[in-house]
Image (cartoon, rainbow, N blue to C red):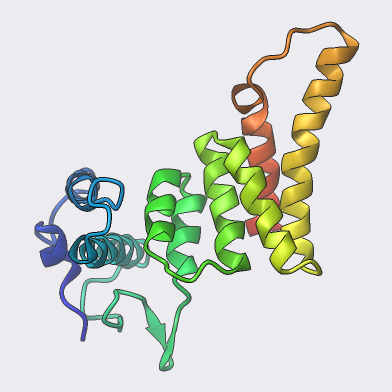
Length: 198
């Protein structure tokens, strides 16, 4: 059985959601890969912290306590002996609009497949970085050109920027940062397609 996630984060099971988030952010800041470049121990610790936080949020969402649900060594919920995908943690964060946390989890996943780039593009779009969002969406399409879901995200990211630029050019509006002006609308479309329309 996996270690108790509350112990991993150094809090009691009775801790409030605010205390949980505060403990998570404190540890995430300490062990973040950007601060500890190349430190394998920090990478492992970061994975444990992410898994513990996701596990507690999942337990609380389902009204359960630790021990009522089975988890593997990485804090991933298991069902019928099958592990959930690591991208489920990312999806939980994206749905909650905790994009920096989603990016933290993605940074701990070594295999950069099309799905990784897909979720990364959504998380970067949510964080306001449309340049990387478009690049990663394009990468996911390059890796799996027949995947309609990946094509849709890329199209929405690209077309949203084009629509704004065309509108601005037609009315002689100065070119301003697309990230700030249109990311909210674009992100709403992306989240709807990703989580509501599948």
